[in-house]
Length: 76
Image (cartoon, rainbow, N blue to C red; front, top):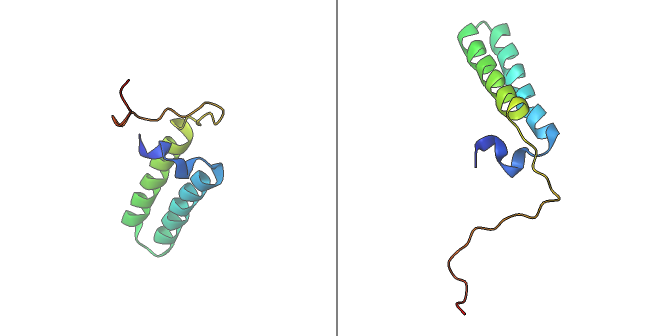
């Protein structure tokens, strides 16, 4: 599983919130006169947009989940 596929990020509002926090952080850094950290925060925002909106594939909730085999199944 990749980080952007984690169930925490399924709701759209959470993905938008992560990007918004990064952008707000960048604005604060630029406003306070620290452009180095502002660029870093913009990089985080760009990476989040790439992961959460470009690569993100929503999980179809209608499909049954496939459970991994644990090896503890009874033998016949």
